Image 1: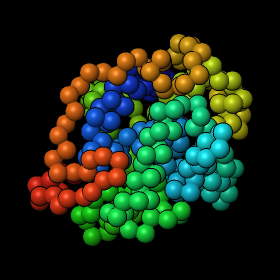
Image 2 (image 1 turned 135 degrees about the horizontal axis):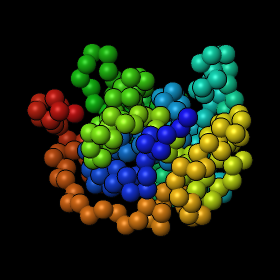
Image 3 (image 1 turned 180 degrees about the vertical axis):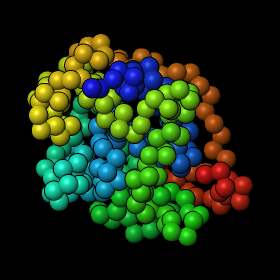
Image 4 (image 1 turned 45 degrees about the vertical axis):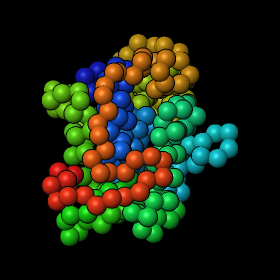
Length: 251
């Protein structure tokens, strides 16, 4: 049974996006923005986020999409092979823009060595531990921990009530209630049975809006004063500057 408690409502999605956007000059918050987009605005499972490569973000053509390869799907954990799918990015322009910006940054910024087509989209952005390498793939446990940090603006109760997989429930619910059909959403989410998708149809209010997570649905962005960059990167093509030891310890 899918509970309404485990779904982020429009105002909550808007608050998290505003919180992370205002702080994306700090690389860890920029990464958290991408994780949130992939979970809540694309419906990817934890393993699918971890295994997503740069070449899987398809921005050209009329129908941009996120390609989820078969080996990264839920089924592959049990049987060794799964069915891939394409998650539409033309359903939400904000998600498309944020992913495109991050992808360009990953490919062009010198702080990420050897970022090629098979490099992970979601990666380590700061060294520290011996086994961590900047640009390396994040573990599943690290992704789980990051969820709690990236939704901190919602408070401790919501941190306890939701998990990274709640993002997937959020995506399916909002996609249905923005006017997408059961068949479309089932295909995007990778549901084998359309009855699974239909379980979400009663959880939030229907709006019929084409841009799932756009301003018309989420409302105006909450007012909040942006943080200072504190020696981190700024701008589209970012130049890195050394950080103090204290900054490293808090990243």
